[in-house]
Length: 494
Ligand SMILES: [Zn+2]
Image 1 (cartoon, rainbow, N blue to C red):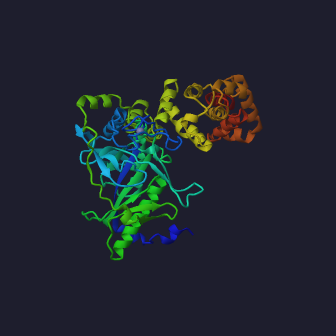
Image 2: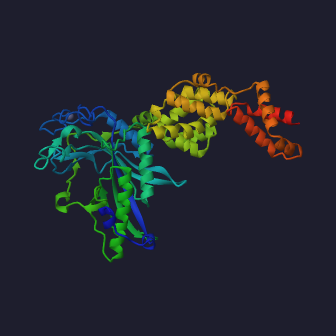
């Protein structure tokens, strides 16, 4: 048994149901720029330690930062995608604290004048749609990275890599509108989808491009006042987010139920032990002593700049799903599946443009293709079938040249070999049998073999007809044109 299961407070379901959680998320995303936010150093991940540094991002005396315009544009794009009001004037501030991976001795972040405020993000949970408020979106620079493990002398020394120093981040702060871990999960997932669609961030959680902290409190159901919140840090995967929130909610309810009071504090999700635990309070007690950054001008954003960013904004996932519903008459479920990523949505639309009927393209992609890709552990970019090849196959099924059953076999071969539909159909001899004489010969054989059923049919048992159709289809490995089979059987049996 893991420590997590031993230590988790165990409360009766009816006790848990008395309470409601109130959750707000603070998400940090790395902006997808080539260079850092205040200098020209590369942001490339995985370069040798301390090779992407300069006097500006190392905070050497006299070095002056200059705001990266691309980073500002991406932050504005995020703000617009989240329905925020971009402020005409925002300002960077110094957030002072000492940590070895912060050579400047302060982080540059927007504080009292953030870039954007008052937004919202629509999420869907179990078919129910709701909007989560976005308090603010602001820009900041990242700190370096302390390396505490992995070296022969890690028991005595820590190492520091300053490559991350000055990498551009946006922080997206939600209102405390989330009520369950599942809602928090859906919110983070939808936010990630928007950041990927808009190409603001690659959202790679393993590389630290997307990070999440949560503010959590609980209150009796129906109470209006918020309870005392704890901030839970280090929720750097979707799984950690769900587990940490579940743990923390139950922990706080346990404290209240036993007559205690929740302490306002910062807690860390301990991955190994599966529990949240308080950070050592002295070491992390912050008084950031914010003050306006004297080396940077306030950020002024004109209406024209906002219009420019808006004009370059790609279609967002929710709008795309609505358009798919409208233009292609596919189901709402399929529209959701097909717009999960921009590349999947593009794949679908390219297939339709190449001549495939939209409904069958939606169906084949969301069922056959995604299932096989999942089994093969790849995503749509690695599909062995390109949209043109899939469209060719679907056109042949639609026109009746091959049956739907053969289509699935052809599809499987195309997926395995990467060959075109026509090559596979020719190779496997799967073309639909439209030759009346050939079908009639098989039909007569089937009838001759089943005199009892012929007698039943002639006595008025219409149900037996399906038996004959099935037998003919079986004899032709499903390749006979079903309509032709019907016609011939009717004629011969009469
Ligand atoms: Zn630099």
